Image 1 (cartoon, rainbow, N blue to C red):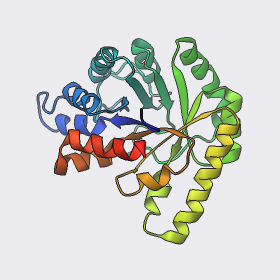
Image 2 (image 1 turned 90 degrees about the vertical axis):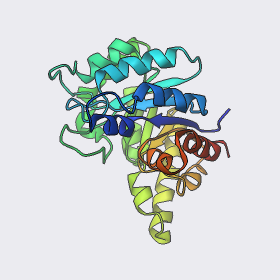
Image 3 (image 1 turned 45 degrees about the vertical axis):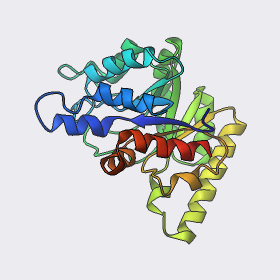
Length: 252
């Protein structure tokens, strides 16, 4: 069993498919490749503009994961994303499939990608009923967070089971030793604070084959979600080999 679980984000597979009519590459088929190659879970981040993952992908991947006991399905996204056209709304979509985990992310519809964690000083009260609503369905809730102990303490007060540390700044500092060390210490401290509060720690954003191993020297990391870099590596070595390469680092 992996020391840290690897959840493969399939958004970029869907993005490539959406660049042409039809269903090529097939997101569900690639999800099966990832599972067969040893991934511990699958992640999707549906948005109302359906630039990549579509509701049909969410439903299809949910059925795929159900056929593989022990594999987890993680849906991440903006909890306030509304019903638009045939997008049912983020919370409705999550409630329809009841994934193992839902990672709430404070991104807006016009963001290229998620680039910051929640400021719970501003959003705790509006998040609280949504968190309880998902937990009542049996969904484990994770909040996308920056490595700030004060914010993590607020997350604990909301009763979430996990947080996902936003690792974009860590990845951006790779190759700059002085900056990297200071950032790494922040993540390490944040993980220890979360663990001490009884919160599980996930991580994700711009982690790759170069920087992942160092980050996972933080022993509290339970899961990483990786999509962009893994998909890029798959162009060179194939999806199966890419999943195996990332999982090997997670097992060290």
